[in-house]
Length: 290
Image 1: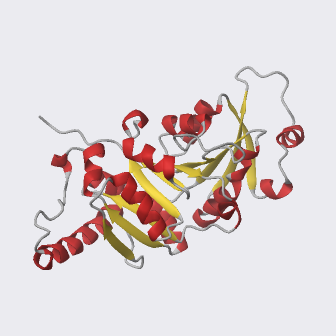
Image 2 (image 1 turned 90 degrees about the horizontal axis):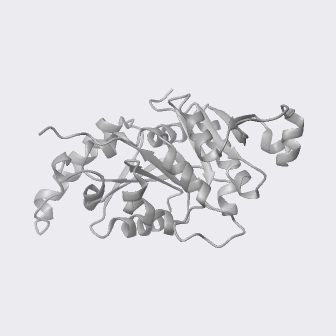
Image 3 (image 1 turned 60 degrees about the vertical axis):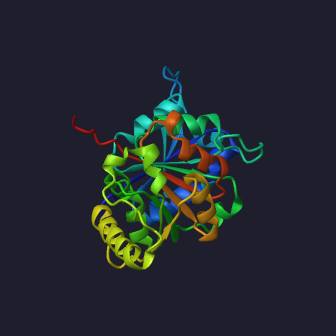
């Protein structure tokens, strides 16, 4: 099994249509990873008589095909806390949730209140699915866009995405965004700075590109059989990520972030404008010794 392979795929479920829209993608992830699919319904913290599995399925209006191969569980509510806590029981969990209600206007930040709260509280990867029928029927992560800077932290954070790519023989579309470091980590952490003199690309850039690719392979443990297509974006990071995701026809964005949503300006801008699934990959800052 590849390093960082996903063992549990968790989908929050309630009576809404939105919650069920994420099931097809979650099932695809579970099948690719060889993991188990768990549909999680938030129950009151002090429930009355236990609800039978049949009554719960009927109340949630889950069709037989939605339940196929899945485990239906109840977790203490609310979902914004119960689902992330459930994910901590297995270190190789992923939460899959719809970005917002398909029948409502797109929120300004691209996420419903519930999806945003789960993202804020989760310390595991979270796959955010926009309400588009294209993602519900035939989606597979065959072209994965990986925004990167020059830091070790963002490279090692993409492990779950590499595991998915390995299991699906996907193409890795690496987008180097030098200004990404300004938000995630200080410049002192940059392990492989971008060439300073781009007016002489024939001398410096090819060597940097080869070194960057080799180092990324080593840090992220990318198997040699996976192709890497490296692009460089020098503009505003969120705009570059959105533009390149469309230009390269990526069907999944895998974005490292350090878990502080209030300060995650790049991620928030991407989520506000993205039109395809986004896999958020949290990592911890490496502290600098003084």
